[in-house]
Image (cartoon, rainbow, N blue to C red):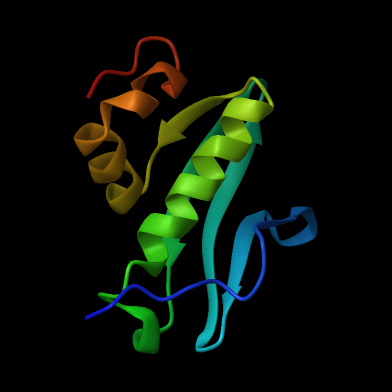
Length: 101
């Protein structure tokens, strides 16, 4: 299946504590909790119509870049985010101190 393209950029919906990205088929999101200089990424969800089309990967990449740009750290409590970081070493530097993949 071909990758799908977002219809909007990443949005940090602070009132809902989630990063969001809109696609034609719906909104994908990652829920988070901020503690000190860390984003605890707790849950990733994409609409059924987007599953298997690269939407979650694109969302995670944008979220990690956002966190890097803010000079923050990541605690990947969500298994999807943890697997993504484990498979993409360029993001290991964002892991919170003491967190190993």
